Amino acid sequence: MADPRELMQRYQDGDARAFRELYALVAPRLFGYLVSMAKSRAVADDVLQQTFLKIHRARAAYVRGADPIPWMYAIAHRTFIDETRRRKRAAVPAGDDVPEIEAGLTGESVERSDEPRVDPELAKAALDALAELPEQQREAVVLTKLNGKSVAEAAEIAGTTVGAMKVRAHRGYERLRALLAGRKGKAA
Amino acid sequence: MTESRDELDVLAAQPPPAPPKISAALEAELGQLAPVRARRPRRQLAVLAGASLVYAAALLAILSVRRDLDELPVGWLVAAGIAWLAGFALPMYFALVPRAGSVMPRWQAAAALAIIVSCAFVVLGWNVHPHGPSSKDYGWEHFLRGHGCLWLGLATALVPVALGALFARGAMPVRSRWLAAALGAGGGCLGGLLLHVHCPIADRYHVGLIHGGVVAVAAGLSALIVPRIAR
Image 1 (cartoon, rainbow over the protein chains, first blue to last red):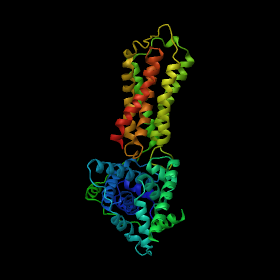
Image 2 (spheres, chains in turn yellow, cyan; image 1 turned 180 degrees about the vertical axis):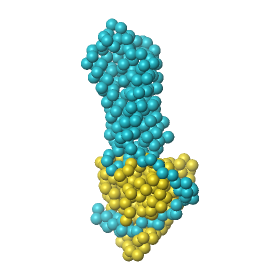
Image 3 (spheres, chains in turn orange, red; image 1 turned 90 degrees about the vertical axis):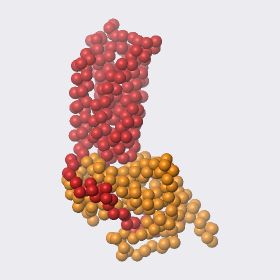
Image 4 (cartoon, rainbow over the protein chains, first blue to last red; image 1 turned 90 degrees about the horizontal axis):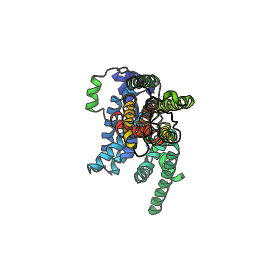
């Protein structure tokens, strides 16, 4: 797999192919994060496009040798918050279309389409519970668990302290556990 | 926690969703992709510090040095000057220079410094303000007469804040208000340094609330304005 640092440097040097490689590398992760946060594939799609446009326009801000991924996530995080506020002000529904989330997160990416599918029932249960978490807790769980970020990285992306991120992630897990246990109890 | 983790593990094992294609707007910009110069935070900090100090020195040359300068304790003059300089340099450093391996500046340190310097110079000015025979006192009754110093301090802060905003553009997607506040506090300290050497008014209200207050006002204004242009 290509090194995002090297791709970013080539992109800064004016290599459009490096940008496409970077997009192929980072966009699926950012898109998964945004779909989980936005609860709508359409909104996530829009925010992802805005995010990459911002990354493109701010590419000179990249410091050579640094890991660009947390910075890109932070831009996606900021863009998502701005877009959510804009939609609230304009009274545009943010979209609570869980089926779309499902469609998004269980949709197979090109490079991993040969991997075995996981249990769709379990995935759906987790997605439904995740969608019910408050935004900050959902973000903490999505970043630390689904996107594999460390607590420190997640805190840097969300612009919060490591302690606050730990608390959000812990509360998120606790709430998820309660939600999932409640559903299992109802089903039984 | 095991149950929720099991379900989350299942979800984490899912392949990432296929993202949409690159938008037409971005494709159009990629069509004219030009090389850009990468950000060099330490060099930018050096340029900012150099240009700001030259600007402050030029202002001082136009305005003249305070008339009671020779009558004041040298130790206080030097120590306060160093404190103002540190108040200028440290918030600027944390607002512009990221940790090694990171793109984004250290907002927590920058925020802490913005708060500390905004309060510290008010307290210091209120409590330590030596007089000389040629010093002036406005006191509380004529406190508002000293507003010129506030404007002068803010005018001095303008160059470092503008340069900081320009250099940090695109690098502060999150917590940009705190980073901007740190830029403002740093700029305000440079204004405070200029006033320290220029203004002969030596009562506690003026030195504490106006010379020290420049830092807090510059930090607040910067936090309001800079994120709009630099995010």
